[in-house]
Length: 128
Image (cartoon, rainbow, N blue to C red; front, side, top):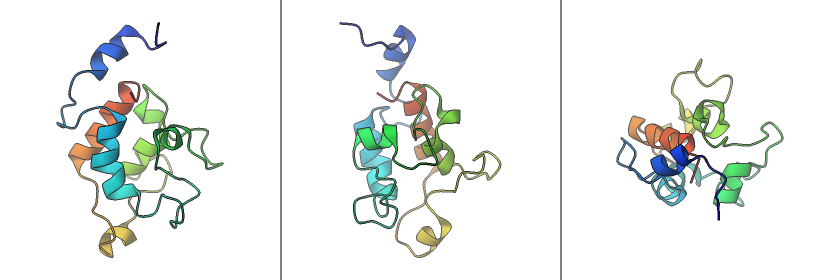
């Protein structure tokens, strides 16, 4: 049965990302989403209108501002990835996550460049 993804995406999704974090949802969730996002982006959290607890929620998003949080194969068009970038111009008007207030209050750790790179790689590999 064919997966519908181009062969180049399938082959790339099996190799580790340069960040050292596997380019799979499970690795991204464990090493980025659970650590940084779920303080707010879960049922009952301050940002529960954009839940990030399951792969379906991350891929779909549930905020009217975005058609989807992830555009598989296109990190530069994915609101989830763009929100992590430290450079305001690169974020294209999307709010920085995690927020400076959450980091300063020590509610969450800030995201590292390696974690941003891992998210970028995961999305560009088709978000397997």
